[in-house]
Image (cartoon, rainbow, N blue to C red):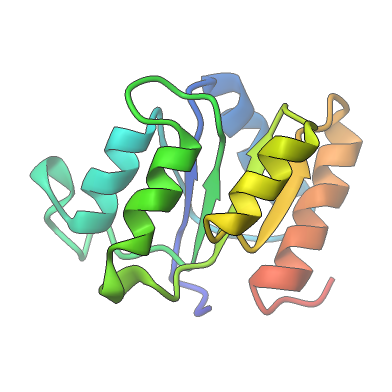
Length: 142
């Protein structure tokens, strides 16, 4: 991933996106985080539709961080949608969900998620998680 490729975060909880941004900053990772509230917006962003048509303002992300439970279209719906898009088949998708159910983890991986993390409740743990994500998926070394 180049430094200019943003990270697209899909989560209907604005506070979760806010704290994720803060965790990236605290970890010393100057990544541009673009937040969208649901799976429908993810699909519009990745397709370059509607307000996301200007790729200079909304470049394809180097990483998609996806929650499962969202309105309109959930994270599983987005994973299924991605499977039908050849131009996005190499997209790195990491699930970040409050669900620790084995069935959700298994389903996410079967649908193409490269990794699955349960949202920590502690900010320091979130910062550590961000460092792990960066090491594994952003070609960064912490």
